[in-house]
Image (cartoon, rainbow over all chains, first blue to last red; front, top):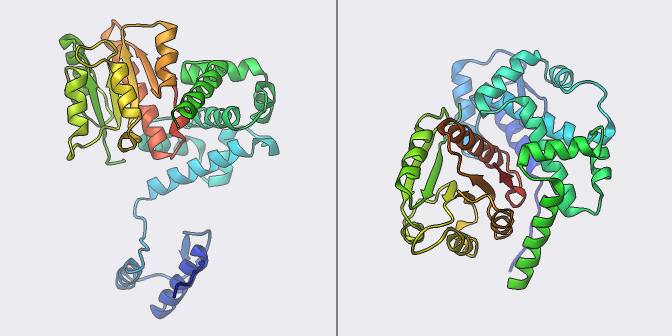
Length: 187
Length: 148
């Protein structure tokens, strides 16, 4: 006999965490998914037991705070780019600093240290990637795409696209179309 | 700091170009490991070996004896085993036709070989950095087109 099951990953993990932390007598609060705050000081022994117990479930404490913060910066940027139509009125540097509670200078240095690129370049890269996916997957015109991504004009979008990829949006569109045609011929 | 390194392979029949290439990578701050092959046949034999470690980025010269860069490109693109390799065409040609044709066949990057060593370093650094972004941020590789 076969049965099919469906499970809620987030709920499952929260439940495991809750049970295990209760057993260990650690008081905690869930901040975001994947982020815990201990409400009382935790002894080294407790911490060790916490890690050992959770390892069995494939749950691991992330050690490197820098990597975590960089991931948060990236997530915030991606969110910012993909929800650009909800119009974020402030500059991205102010937005990031506010949202993450660190100075922009600190975030910026940390980001470059870990990722080999700058926050500014990462924002441009994400915007251009978003533009690419809109070009290939929708019927939006370049004018509409420029508007949606909050470029001041199509020319501005095209220039940044060309500077980032070395080709124009129109050439990009043509190459992708030809690739698809070639692939369809083969199949 | 990320502990990973980028594994880079070049196939080029010109010995000087191979030397400059390896030397340029030696001077970059990004961690890389570089292997070179002197023609397309040698390259494909190495890639098709069952124990082969596949490169993150493969640089292909277009004009090579025995098997050309475009032949290698088509062969690689028709084999699912190689789908994660980013392919960079590394050529003296800057003809629009070559460029568009190799992109259509599935190349990700087109580099016109620079004559200046510092330009080469800059270009290779850009390529590895952008490839790293695609790799670490799970970006759509099908949309990865870069011309330098």
